[in-house]
Every structure is written in structure tokens, then in C-alpha cells.
Image (cartoon, rainbow over the protein chains, first blue to last red):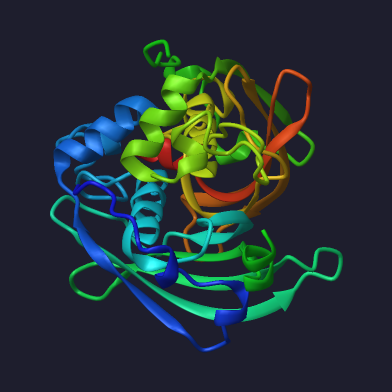
Length: 161
Length: 161
């Protein structure tokens, strides 16, 4: 992957800049077998993530990436090019699913839709946005859906600080 | 981390072996600043995951692990010592949250409770279990909750196969 780049502060978005219906699309990342196996050795050492031969005749039919690897690549794409949130992407939690596996050679990108924008009642300096992010491959098939709640600072807090 | 170990096949659990109320507790993993920064450089390059000094005075007050790093360590603990599912741990999806951050020096373990056991209507060779897994630190504080749906093969399919 390329080194992360820093957006100018002026390009980053505050809570006040988000609205329901906004869409953000990330750059792409090409995943290969070496990346899949390296992640699996460290975090998900199961045969279908480690070995091209092992999964033949199983549910997967070939080497597939750990779902957590797909999630981690999704985060990298969001941080670098997907969601330019002021002060960074800080998730509270969310729902996720992996409708189909990520395979070697897949070209992943993330398409994010802002679905809710909620000011904090207790903290005037921030709000929460709910973003549905689909991680899609080169055939536009969805390999991960993440419906996440994210903390976002309000512009007033930056001005005051 | 230690190398993964393989359970004897006889020690692994099939769908028929699971019931609501079962609890599984994993081994532990100690996370340090070097691991936190290495994961962040690759997958979540934000200042509060990369630098001890940057997060002072922010929401976090110090270096914290990416939530996806906590999720990945949780998976490793589950694969090696947490959930001995026959044919491996294959998730369909779930809900997750990070009630508090993971910090350098934290000793993580995963406590998993089986909350639902559902045979597949269309596929007699498998079922789905819903497992709530809390990742806890050395003070028994919860740093991640993952409520996941997992595919589990039925024992009959192993006998037939």
C-alpha cells in the first residue's frame, strides 16, 4: 500500500458538514495471496486463509481472506481516501456482515453513505453519524457491509479550541 | 504470539454439541505499543494509534489500539483457544462495539457465551450459532463486544463425509 497522506485540515469535515444522503467513495486496494496469508498467520490462522490447496472442496473453494483482514483494509481505505473526518475516524461500534469472501486478486474499494446525523445531547462539541459502508470488489460485488456509528467533532469546538 | 496449535479433531465441537448457556474462555494475549503501532501503520494510520504523544489532551489521553486490531487479536484468541469449532470459525457477520479503548500493556482474553443455536432449514449439514464474545482486559473491563453469527457443521455431515 502507498504511504498514508494527510489531507489539509481545511479539507476535513466536521459534524456540521455532514448530511443524510452524502456518499463518499475511496481509492482502491489490490489484495493478493501473500497479504492474505500474512494477515492470517498473525491473526486468523485457519487453513482456508493460509493455503491455496486446503480449501478446495470446502465451502470456500479456494483461498479466502479473513473477514477481519477485509475489515482492516476497509479501514485503511477509509482513513486515506474514504471518509475525511476532522480529527480522524473514531468508531463506537456497528453491525457488519460478509456476504461473500474476498479472494486473491480482488480490487477493493469502499462506498460509504451517510444515513443518520445526530447531535449529541450531552456534549455540544460533537455528534454521531451513522455510515453504511460497502466494500466492493472489481465486479461491484459486496464483500463487506459495515454500518458504523462514528464520533464527529463539531466545527464550533475547533474554533473554540 | 505463540504459534497456533491444532486441537485433535475429536476435541472439536459440531453443531450438535452446542447449547444455549455454554461459556468458553480463551487464553490471554499481552498487547504492547510496538504491536499497536505496527498494526496502525498497515491498517489504521491515525495519530492516536501511531504516537504516544499525539493523543495527549484528546478524547483518548494516550496511545490506543485500533478497534480493528482488538478485533483481530480477539479472532486469534478464538481460533487458538476460545471456540473449538469443527472445520474452523466462519462468521456470517454480527454486531460489535468498543466500550473503551485497548491500551499498551493490556492483557486481553475473550469470554464467549452461546446465546442461540439454530439448525439450518435449507442445509441439513449445518447450523448457525450466535455467540456473544466479550474481550476483557486485566481489570475485567470490556474493551470489545462482538455478537456474531457463526456457521457450524453438524456431526452427521462429518460422519457422512
